[in-house]
Length: 330
Image (cartoon, rainbow, N blue to C red):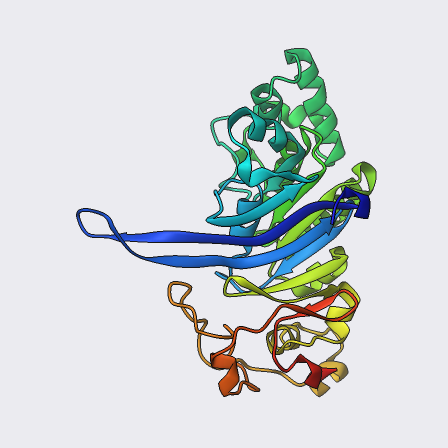
């Protein structure tokens, strides 16, 4: 795939292992398999939702794409440029096109800097504007995220969680990027504020033709904002499909279990739904199961599942599943 196919980002066999050291001489005794060989692409202007339970590798995937973590192996192509091979000034220049909205609006803003300094810092670091231009740009960005420009002189502790996340959104837009990793941007916010932030992200996407990788726990919110959804389990992808197809006809037992846990506002429909309760705990990423990683908790697992790693294959047009028995659910 290339930009001719409207593909902005292409990830090939991305692996991110974190070494575990022990003893006085710091000998490596193992590794955390945070991300284990995932491949996908994101088109220009698209929102790809990435879901899965805590610790499955979602945030690590986002950070490895942006080279905040140097991947153990694999390739990340942005506009057909391999980010993994870039260093120093070349990588710094590419970072202007890619930004991140962090999960915790309380920890991601420097408490010693004013809002104006926080939003204007990317412009100063990349030396792309004068002091006067930075002030004007900060005011414009605060207007964009529906905050009063006079807030520029205040400090982060003076704002609510929702307002802080808007400041984080404004900072991510400062350099006019085309790709933004949204790392659970609403999980720390009240439910009433979540919808406002998601609506703001959608408006900004339409206005600036932004491309999002939207990482989240909340499956109903992912359904609202995403064009396609990918489901992750213990460092690997188990299913990828268009939003509506994934929600109406999930083909992987893990996806089915996740969707069965999503509350439905209609009590009549909710009472008729079948709940899938997964047995056991998520295995350790230090020592993941052999074969299919989900086989230890899967209700349809057979002996073959513990031996053979299922191929992440295209079952229908645009619908990829990593399960030996996916055809049973069609």
